[in-house]
Image (cartoon, rainbow, N blue to C red; front, side, top):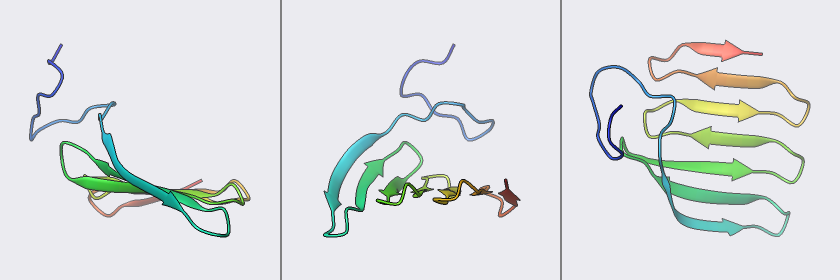
Length: 82
């Protein structure tokens, strides 16, 4: 088992640790946080309608709409919708 904090340029991990480096909200009740991940910086938006969006340090993104549909864009650009 790899030690915490180790990294590898090949393979992937199902768990990517991160540290929240900033956060805030706006007058409409939407909130965000910025994150530091081993691969790069990232951020997360959470909206008052229940939708949310992640942009990860590995260039992947994930969006879940208020209606429940979701879209994942992999680091290689492939898009998966559910």
